[in-house]
Length: 456
Image: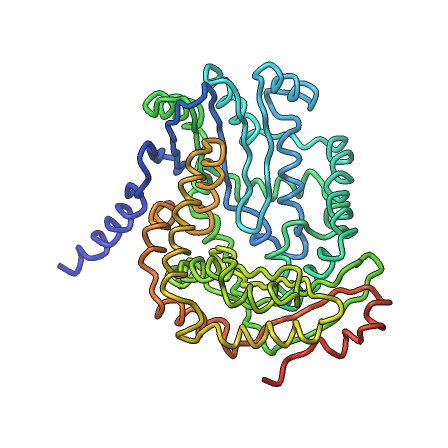
């Protein structure tokens, strides 16, 4: 019997790896022998098709030597490849297909998508195949594109909120901050080479690290057949890239930190508060409880909104959790009344202290929050063009099952679940707080002295 155990274990692992995920109605899934997962979403509202491919790549895979190159890789995706020798030919082909196209780079996902007439499905898949599998990184193309990517970075730096966010992130994530920074580092972007692009491609751009989604006025049997004929020859890496190149674990915030930045660009003050929250690897239940709780806080009837916005202490007071596979951030953003910065800060901390109280929200608010989440999910499903990116986001940062069960699991969230989330990640836990303010306003309001932990 002992000799059978390893074989049985491997069989169970193989069965789990190829298990059919739970999906909504009109969603269909297949996995090719090379590891490429394919989802087809049938929706015949308009005679269009959309193709999206997502790769588990982004800031979370980047150390300081590569930070920003996933973003540059996204831009280079729409350049030359083996079928289209230069960008001019690439763009001409998009016009022939009548394609609308774009891509994004985030913390845990890079995705590329094309929308075109349903009659161009095969041609569109071939077009995507050439771009994802056979890019050509011409030095002249990179020379032109590096300033474009860095220009996005520089435009961000003209926003005082962006500058504050960057400084807060450095303190929240420490030496691993690049793993949460999709925009990158100026020097890395501006000195990128074709060789570095190929390093990224040869680490992460494999079918067993990718998800292909086909949506719109298509039939799943036909879509699967065409996708397999085109992408079936894409060679697997042979092992999971995220296992082969493991992501370092983030260190907890050691102690609460406050700081103030002065910027002449800041016409009004902005405050950020950040905690390290749950992730889907270790506490998926906590991520769902966070979704429900912060939906409650966003309601006009919440104590949070009434204490800060209704009493004119802040122009806005938002709180959110960002779903992540690797330590999701919990954040509060305040736009305080410049004349009431101390009162705003004290009241915000007072409210945060009460978040875990049994009476902080009512049963009705809990029901309303769940109803809001349900309605939002229905609205999202009514927009076919949104479905592919929603699906790939959940696939990279959670799972397809998580996406399908999200609303149902939110409806199961109890007060105890929310209290557990708050006690585990917020109450009494270290955090980072930063404020950006105009120098003259800082001097006038003495904001630097008033922005500090409360003594409540």
